[in-house]
Image (cartoon, rainbow, N blue to C red):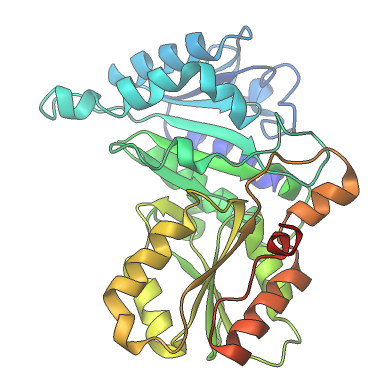
Length: 330
């Protein structure tokens, strides 16, 4: 997936001289996760720039560059680091178009690595979609593998709005066959049916898409797996179409239960289709705790395929919400 991201950046930079990129260690070192390999050599230091350790400074510079006609792509090494620069993103970039009565656009792409599973500890392992998706004016996409990373990133760079692109770092080394070029570009706001099924709809995002697919493989029930791909705006039509067929909805989330994106998804579907559902929508999430550092605890924290399958099986068997695993310890 890291190679797919580098390929997407290269393709957009070849096609549009206004695309520039900067961030910490992205040029000479080719990115901490090698997502910008070869770009400095291909495009030079005017378009591929290393920055000081100052997210507020270089994100602010990117907002100004975007407002004056360039298409900057910046990298936040770990998404938690954007905390010191959120004002530049949610108060400035997200609102320039509105405050200027439509005269200013901010075609800015903010990439950030996210998620648990590699032992980076509680300060470097969150997904933090909640920091972004409650702010009008931003779009938010999440990669689930090489193909989606490539296609979504190219769309994000072309969009005239600020787009945050979250990249689960546990997937950077994941390999898969994929195409490049124009046919591989994925429109923002469109979900993908990763697997067709009839008994239950599993809606997943990012690193949980492979886990949802693994849970569905070999299960005695038939699951339709939806890769949401874009969280803001999300594909409401695809959700309603799938749940109309399966009559059941399960979200699979790598985020704490409280305030997670599945709250919005389940609320929307239940409000639109309450009389058609054969069971309550449920959410498979992480507990409301910090991401543990220890390997065994970190793996327990994340919704693994076995746990997802257990939750879905219990829902199908009883027609009721099964308890979350941590509720047994209260």
